[in-house]
Length: 154
Length: 70
Image (cartoon, rainbow over all chains, first blue to last red):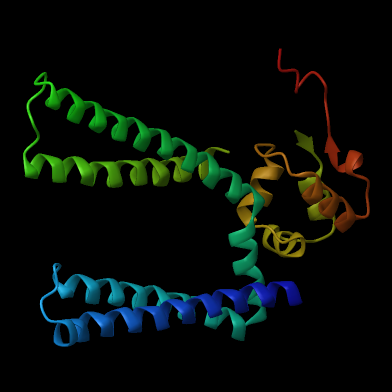
């Protein structure tokens, strides 16, 4: 049981790290333009990253903080997250989504190569954005679908 | 792999959730084990056997023909 509480406490410490890091980054995004002057990037991007980290930290603290107060919930949470069958299913799903993203990235590289020698037309900025979005979304979809399918059928 | 998990679990008056908590896995894993869709790691197999006070071979019924990968 103490190993389990150690693991919960480690997740809570990680939550505090995200929270603190997010606060620092968000404040840096607000203060940097005033201290340094013109930045080459929009300072709102830095603040946005900070807010994202704050959100992740808050989620960690809420999720694992509740488990620390309730030992049965903690045991159940640890069993769900360390469950050997789920770890295998996640690894299989990750493997499938990796191959999808690898093939798509390879296709993108090949397209760019052929554009250089004039064999294919160049991608517009919009087309490039949609392609990059697909490289992120499609493997994630494959991961989620694979996990859901295997949960039921294996 | 065929097993006597459901038989021993019900004999001992345990629900799937209770057994899952005792051996530190999810209820879904217990369900998959009982249906023979998932084969446990050796550590989990030993934990389950100890839970019921039996040997692993009495709990999981290994058949050479079933696992022939030719």
